[in-house]
Amino acid sequence: MIASVFIGMSLDGFIARGSGAYDFLPAGGGEPHGYDEFMATVDALLIGRKTFESVLKLDSWPYGVNPVFVLSTRTPAPAPSEAIVEHISGDPPDIVTQLEARGIRQIYVDGGITIQKFLRAGLIQRLIITRVPVLIGQGIPLFGPLSGDIGLRHIATRSFRSGLVQSEYHMECISGRCTVPPLW
Image 1 (tube, helix red, strand yellow):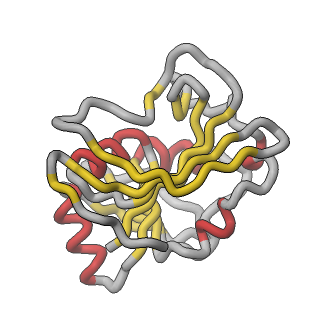
Image 2 (cartoon, one colour; image 1 turned 120 degrees about the vertical axis):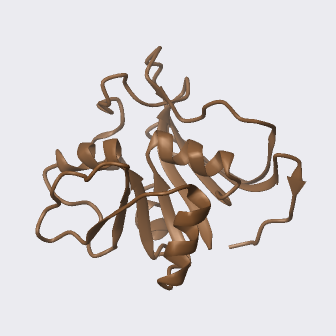
């Protein structure tokens, strides 16, 4: 399974304010920056409960018909009627096994804690990070503590008129285990 992250963050490394608000991100994602093209490559989303609850506050369901698995030890809030949402729990390797058994080959991993858990487990292969030209000083960081270095291979960096800067990386070394990741 290929697990990818596509996320926006402040220049100082925060994906949301401490309250969970991400009002510093451009409304509607700002100018086109590859999100739709990225979404066309994934079979399902795996998001944390807090991220799911934030998404529920949006005016419309942003994931269309893509199945969304909400990772939580608690039952998540009810989903909108047009959404395909399922509760899932377990350790990252177990979740990957469950999703692969269902034929899912490419997942979009979202939510700070969820991303951090999957990174620590060595289960993220691709990071696409869009930096927003703003410093917010504090908030929820994209990255947390790691047990070892994670080597990355830079694939590309693009800049946009609005000041967004997007970089794509593929994993090479996770906790001393090095591989050459697949090219997409």
